[in-house]
Amino acid sequence: MRTGLSILDIGAGQGWILDYAQSQSCDYFAVEPVPELSASIESRGGTVIGRDLSEDYEDYEAAFDIIIVRHVLEHLLDPSSAMRTVQQMLKPTGRAYVALPNAGAPSLKKGFRTAFIHATHISYFCAGNLRRLGAHAGLRQVAGEDSAELWALFKREAGVLPSRDNYYAQQKAVFRRSARSSLGKDVMSFAKSLARPVVRRIRNRA
Image: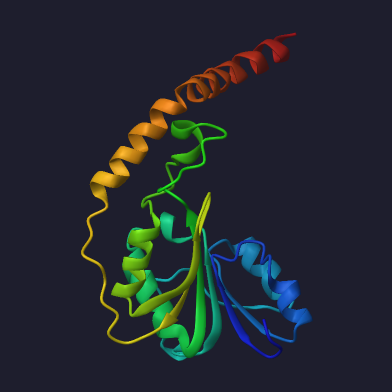
C-alpha cells in the first residue's frame, strides 16, 4: 500500500483497515449496512458512501486504487452484479482484493454442517468459480491462494473470457466427503447446542 491511495472497504464492519490506511495517508471509504458501525467509521475519519452494493455508485466510477471485498460475496443474492459494481468503481490501474470461505477445501476444525455451512451464506465459491465470477465482470485474477481461506487479487481487463467449466459435480463431491469426515464433530456440536439451554434453565432454577 502506497501513500495517497484511495481505498474502498466493502462490508467494512469495524473498519479494521481504517487506522492503517490513515497511517499511510490514504483516503478511506466504506460501504457498511450497520448504522452503528457506519457511525464509528465516520467518527474516526472515514467516509461511508453507501449501505450495500445494490445502490447507485455512478459518482464513484473508476475512483478507487484498492477495493476490499472480504467475506461479503457469500452473503449476497447476486454476487455477479456486485462484482460488476466493483469493476466499475476500480481504477484502470487499481486492484480488487476478494476473500471468501473456501468451499473447495472447507475448514472442518469445528465441524461441517454446524460450522462451515451457515444460514447467512447464500453462495459458496471454489477457486475456479471465483475466477469465472471475476471474468464475467471484466476482472482478471492476477494473484491468489486456494487454502483454508480463498482469496484473489483482480485487475480490470476488457475481453476476459470466463471458463466454461462446470463446478457443480466437483463441489457436490467435496461437500459429501466433508460431511462424512466431520460427522462426529457435527453430532457433538449439535448435542452441546441442545444442552446449553437446559443447563441454563437448571442454573436459573437453582
